[in-house]
Image (tube, rainbow, N blue to C red; front, side, top):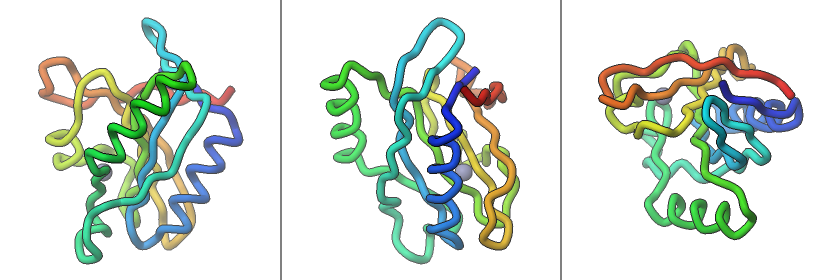
Length: 140
Ligand SMILES: [Zn+2]
């Protein structure tokens, strides 16, 4: 289960709409416990893919990733996962998403239909990396 405030969910939706028709991406920072991720901050980061690919993919640079880990640690938070958008595609994790994901993290996906945010789902990779499993998204 991943829990987010209404404000953070709104922030993610607005970011996804602002980047449309490209994919947006960002970090989810907060506290992890055994069966849940509680997000305290959703932070937009640049999608470092080039123009032609940003419509279908997202990538967070290693620098950005490192910076996020450091920032989270300094503020006593943890990097819980990532969010990204699927412009004109369902909020289901793609094969590309699976191949580039790591277990432990939450992968929150928001679909954007014709510029308007729609469904939100969150995914966690099984520890053997074979498949993504959906996790509940709860508003807190
Ligand atoms: Zn994706």
